Amino acid sequence: MTIRIGLLTAALLCLFCTPAHAQRGQSLKIGDNAPGLAIAEWVKHAKGHPEGDVSFEEGTTYVVEFWATWCPPCRKSIPHLTEIQNKYEADELRIIGVTTEESDVVNRFVKKQGRRMNYSVAIDKRNGTSRAWSRAAGQNGIPHAFIVGPEGKIQFIGHPLSDEFEEILEEVMGGRYNRKLMMQAQSHIDGIENARELKNWSQYELLTQELIDRDARIFYNYILDRFEVFLLKQEDAPKAYAYAQEVIETYPDDPELLGWLAERIAAAPNIPDAKRDLDIALEAAKTARTNSDPDDPRYLAFEATVRFCRGEVTEAVDLQERAFFMASPRRKSLYEPMLQEYRSKSNEVASNGGG
Image (cartoon, rainbow, N blue to C red; front, side):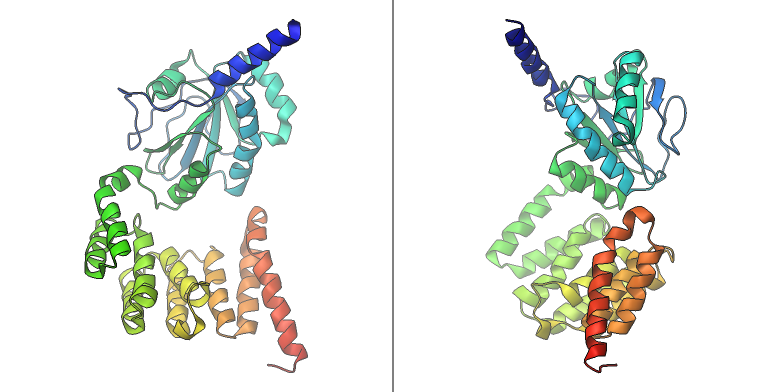
C-alpha cells in the first residue's frame, strides 16, 4: 500500500513538473522587456553575478529557469544548464535557477549537487518573481526557462531541455535572434519557401532581399542562402561570386557573416570543388579578420580553413595553432580537431618531400 501511494505521489508530481504551454490572456510574451528578479536569498552565486535583486544588464544574455528540488525533469536539466554555463564566460551568459522552496531544503540540495550545478541559484522573495514571470507568461509547470537577450527583451519561453532552447540561445548570444521580428516576417518566410519550391527565382530574390534589408543580422541566413541558390540552383557562378563580392563590400562590419561565407565557399560539402572560388573565399576570410576582435580565435580558424582548402597547409597550421592557444581553456576543444587534421596533412606533405 505504501509503495502504491509513493508511486501515485511521484506520478502526480511529474504531472505538475511537465511544462505547460502559455495560456490565453498572458501578459508577459516574447519580445517584452524582462521583469526584474525579486530574490530572498542567493543559495549559490556564480562569479560575476550581482548580489540582491536583479535588473538585467545591457549586453549580457540571461537564462532564468524556474525549478524545484522535488521535480525529476528539473534535476535532469541541471547538468545541461551547467554545461551551457561552462561553455560561455560569466559576462556573456548568466544562468539563474529560481525556486520558491524553503531555504534549508534548497541549500542541502545545492550543496549535494556541488559542481554539477555550476550556475546561480536563488530563492524567490514571497513568490514575487514567480508571479511576474511564470504566472504572467501562463507557465504552470516546471521546469521552464526564459531567455533574456542582451537588449533586455525576452526571446524564448519554454523547456530548457528542448532543442529549440539551445539553438535559440546560441543565436541570441550572437545578436542574431529576434523572435518578434521573425514572427512579423512570417509571410515573407513562407513566400520564400514557396518561391524556392516553385523555382520562381525572381520572387525568391525579391523576398529575400526585402528581409535582408529589414535586418541583415537577424536574417543573415538568407544572405548565405542567396549565394548558394545563385551558384547551385541557378547554376550561375559569375552571379554567385559577384554577389559574394558584394557581401564582402557591404558587410565589413559583420565579420562573423564574412567568416561563414568564406568557410562555405571553401569547405561546404554540397559545393563541388570545380565551383569554388578560393580567392574570393580568402578575401572574405581576411576581411573578417581585419574587422573582428583581434582576441577572437574564430577568425583565425576561418582563414585557416580557407588556407587549408587552397593547399596552403603550413599557413593553415600556423593560423589554427594561434587560434587554439588564444582560445579560453573551456573552448580549446573547438579548435583541436582541425589543428590535428592540419598537422597530419602537413606531416604527410613533408614526408612526401613537399614544401
